[in-house]
Image (cartoon, rainbow, N blue to C red; front, side):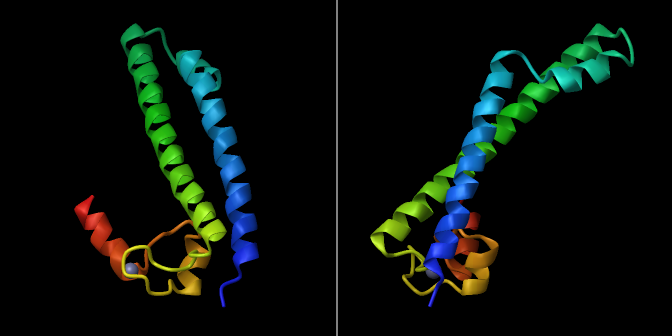
Length: 123
Ligand SMILES: [Zn+2]
């Protein structure tokens, strides 16, 4: 028997954490990069090209991280709605039970180990 309550607690707190990180990333993206990083880099020289490249790098990084957080948040929301629906812990593709060890490692997973491998290839 899967410890649903335990996973629900973990997923809920992870969801809150991600929402906070997304909110702070979005703020830093609109204010043009992260002050902390830019300061330490601009101290190392006056090269404008390097500064611009650094800015672009961090904007790109922010974008990548945001997508990553949003993707994870989507997965977590999906897992939470499966908990509500009572289908949590069952693979949404082949409907077999997902091992508890796997749920413990990746609580938001919707797939069993075999399907996950298939889905990743298709992506
Ligand atoms: Zn499966």
